[in-house]
Image 1 (cartoon, rainbow, N blue to C red):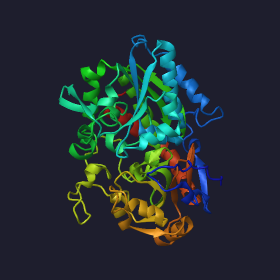
Image 2 (image 1 turned 135 degrees about the vertical axis):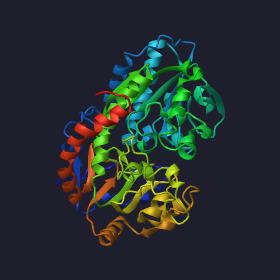
Image 3 (image 1 turned 90 degrees about the vertical axis):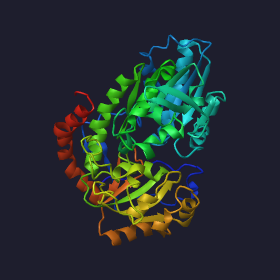
Image 4 (image 1 turned 180 degrees about the horizontal axis):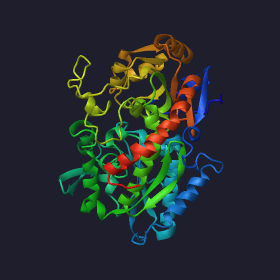
Length: 474
C-alpha cells in the first residue's frame, strides 16, 4: 500500500480553530493509505496542476485560453470588474484560482490598455471569508487596493428580468464590464444538479440574499436554477458581460483553463466534464456499503473534499444526484431539511435518508459558517478537541451541532472509538488530498474492486442519460 498523500494544510481563519491546535491529521494514523484517482479511473485526463511546473502552468494556461477571447470592446478609459467566488479559493488550496485571477487582470490590461480593473469576490454565509483570501494571496496589493469582498447583505441593485425584478449586489455591477472568473468543479451538485452550472453564480455569489435564497428556502434544488439564467440573460447584465474564464477542474486536479465570450458554450463543455468525471467519483462513492467519514480540511463541514467530491454530496450519494428523473428531493439540502419534523423524521415518505453507509463522522478539522446541525443530528459524530466544539457552540449557525456529538481528546482516540462503535475499518478521509484519495487499506481494496464496473456503467448507461436530460449529445 502507498503512503498517504499530504493533505491540504490548515489555514488561519476566523472560521476555524488555530492551526496550531491541529496536532494530528487522520491520514497520519496507522492503516491509512492513498489511491491515485487515475488508478481508479484511467481515462481521467492528465492535469497541469498540481504538477512539475507548479503555479506557472496556471498562468500559461490562462494566457493561452484568453488569446481566443474578444476584448476589443474594452477601451482604456473603461472600468472592469473581475467577479470571483469564495469556493474557488478552497479548490486545491486556492493558489491556482488566485493565479488565474491575477493573470486575467494582466491580460486585460495588456490587450486593451484598461487600467481600472477591480476584483469583486463573492461569498456565501461567511461574510468576511473572501477578505481573508484577498489578503492571503496578496490580491489587495495586486489590484492596487481595488480588491474587495462582497456579501449577499451588501447594498443591492434591481435587475429587470423576464420573470420580474431580481436583485444583484451593487458593487458587482458598478463597472462598465464584468468578467466571470470561476471553475468547473461541480461543488454543490445537490443544489444545481449540474444544470446551468456555469451560470449559477449570477443567482448566488453575485446576488442579494433575497434572490439567492431561492435555492435554499423558496424553490429548492434544481427548481431555482432559472433565477440565475434570468439574471444573466437580462439586458442589464448582458450589456456589461465581457467574457468568462474558468479553471477546468477535475477530481484529480486542474487540467487547464477555458475561456469564452459565450457563457452557454462554456457551460456545455463543463457540463460534459461534470457528468463524466465527477459522475464517476460520485457513483463510486454511492457503492460504498459502510464507512467512517473523517473530515480534515480547511472549509465548512459541507465543503470538505475527497476525490474532488464534497461531503455534502457524499451524504447524498445513496441517490443519483445527476438523474433529473429522480423526483424526490436529494438526501440533503436546506430545502430537504424543512421537510423534517421536530422528531427528526421526514414529513413525507419521498425524502431519502442521509447516506446510511456513513456509520460515523469524525470531525477532526472543519470550519464553521454554514449550518450543519442536520448532519450531526442524523449521523453519529465525534468532534476532536474541546476548542473545536466550543468554536461551533459560538457560531450562531451551529449552536446545536456539538449537542448532537461527542467530544474526543485527540484524533487517535476518536478513530479508535469509531472502529469499536461501528465495527468497520473502511474509512474515507475528506482532506483534499491532491490527485487521489486518502483512505484506509480496507476501503482502498473495496474501491479498486468497484471502480471498473462503475466506469463502464457511467460510460454506457448513465452518462448518455444525464447528458440527454440536459439537451447535450456526446
